[in-house]
Length: 409
Image (cartoon, rainbow, N blue to C red; front, side, top):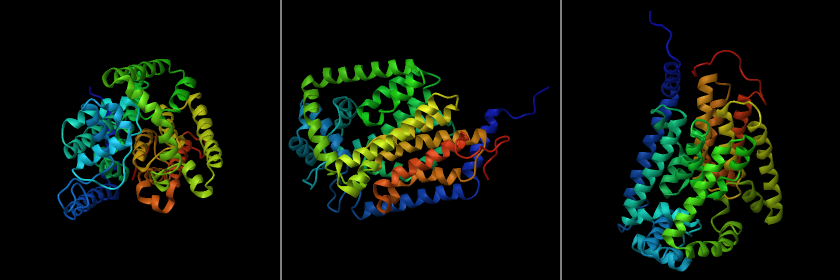
């Protein structure tokens, strides 16, 4: 006789479907997507996006990657760190001179990722970049919460749109972090490979070694170290050791002139450090305050990763802390917060929702929309909202609701 009880997998999928399609949430997602289409079409017709009124490509952050890749293809990878040469290639990419400059600040291993894009023109390369990095993010989130209808919710997130419009690398960073955490328990060696690739932007990997050490995830650590060394060596082999020399020489200029001087725009820099710099104009004090803020995350992270808590909340905390702890975080990087949101949604669907979970999770989607009002505190506040959800779910702040999982209504 067949068991009439639905399988756990069926129940779980039904819970996700119900949460996505019941009432206003689904209507809101559809409405946001339609609004994006209307705004994008209007911006294109007005010459504000993709091409200008003269039919020339509009420069966005992605021009930085294409120019560096083109220089590497031409056999001059090290000149990507020479700002005059790199700026000239950016002008060539869009076919005209433009004011401003998108500086190349990345280690040579990132050239391995962007150089193939320069085989085609700037506009198609931009589209390919967004599709590939967005696909990586979607795939990693699917490995966390396997339900395809989550894709419209992903597209509706303002953080995704902000990153895609600029052609930035936030989708790539989010995808690598998501894949690392999705496979960390099941396939640790593979998780370490994704983490090793994240060294192209090392400020987001600062807390991963700590969590892996206290959590005794040795396979992940070894795999990540080997991957990082292999990729760095491969970049030196392909582009020449002089490229690494040029990168090292450019680091002090990059940090002092771009990051610490705030030339990229303090309001767009989403960290406690940036907020204190604007508030006090005191670099030393800003570092002290940010250090205290980062220490808070370290303490909570160590506590979670050394006690028997649910992996979903551990992973959500690590991804959130990776964003919160770095002093150099920009609006397009906030797409990384989709990773902890996905883990927390999965946890809630399995264990039941608590009051205010959904609006608190929604706050992580909106930093690009509210940064004009909250400035550099927009993302730190979103991280605090996620931390509150994580603590509540583990019963550290508010007692968890008892009883069986409850479908959202």
